[in-house]
Length: 318
Image (cartoon, rainbow, N blue to C red; front, side, top):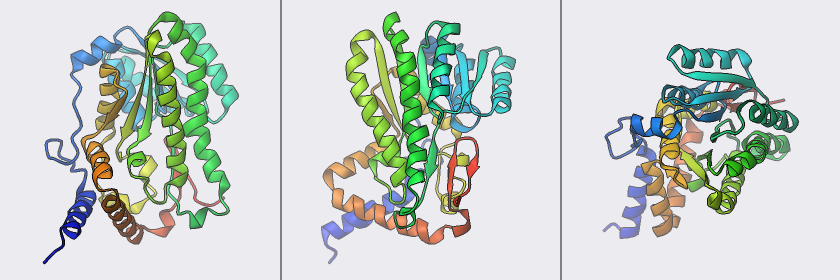
């Protein structure tokens, strides 16, 4: 006779392995659709700054916002790529301007904030989307402190610096929103993502603390717990080629949902299921996570190990 706990563990492990059906209407990954009129009502005529806007999630989000009537301030390192995105927006009847900036250069981020405020007075919505992911075991990280430094620079210090630069004007005008793109991995503490998830956890804590301070000034802070998305950021992990993932346009739906609802947090449905699983059966969930990690590790090609940012791939060794 099968023990009930063993059966529950097996079912949960199966669920973890099969989460994320690509079909929007199946019980797995369901991306809540944003009513276009709702988004237009939220952003039409407003200034929205999107970081990491040259590709992937940031590009899809910027194009969606431009189509809804926002003036989109596009931020990333590659000016040429940003100009292509701006052309997509303006060709469709929207408006955008290009602001090349390396978000790991905090002085440059400070200048960016000053210039944007000088030109626009205030930013109505800030979308901190740019990020860098590193997947590497802790055993392979003993002599790689720079991995942790790099992820903190772009995933935490950059967004914090930009927020500090733009927030005073939001509070002064009595309205605004900061949308921080986090990770569904924060709900799992996924193995081999210590550097990446530690930086996203720091941004999450920053968001929660700031939200409680600025709510009375009409400013909302929204955290989007983003599931796996098919972008260059996950390309080096070969095992993810067989794992269902959102398209960038579907990821943009989650960000736009957060802008429309001004919710404290936006989480895809399987993320909510993981939160529930952790509360009622944490040990079983951890066993499932370990199993998934082993299977992914066995499937990946060592030559593809490394880390990437939102715009370019970074070699594993230096």
